Length: 254
Image (cartoon, helix red, strand yellow):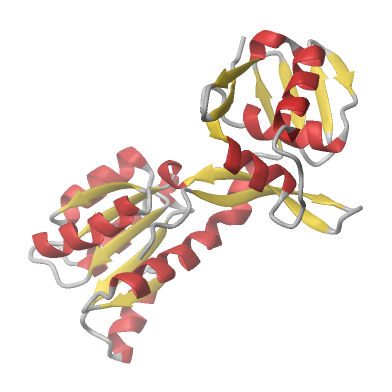
């Protein structure tokens, strides 16, 4: 199985001309997943496949440590075994739901119990879904990708407008304010700038930029990205856009 592409598109604006969504994204490495299970083999197997997809993974062998890690790291997803010695999954889930900063975190039970009463008890404890054992890697990863799509609205709303150094970028209004003055940029220049500035210091690969800004349905020349970067450098400053030879570009904050 080939690893999932290393980004999950979840930030977007709407382009009325093309009637499509233009995506800004969080990479898989930005997504934290916590595994809580008393079986080392499960932690190793599931953790391996999640890390292979690029996710940032934390593990805990029991509920107490799981709660401690969750409160500290605020994961997007917690995969929680039901049958654990000491504090079982139900009690762990109830306690997790009492932590305010985890209100948007998905909690999914990993269990061999598929009875209706067990699932109902889990949902009442605050679980969002179930994954049944034995775990099949392909099914597991498909399930996790589907679950993570549920966090889209919360992230999208919080990132509609953001600041990167002396730039203010308003994705919904397609507006850029540079050093206190509003700039008007062509649509593709704006989308390229918004993508790079969404993660200052992060290197975006050329193929990633091409896919996110131009999309797979548009055929453009190999120098298209370079031309748009040159135009942005002329308008915003040459020192803001760094070329990583043979890889791509990154945006530098002042």
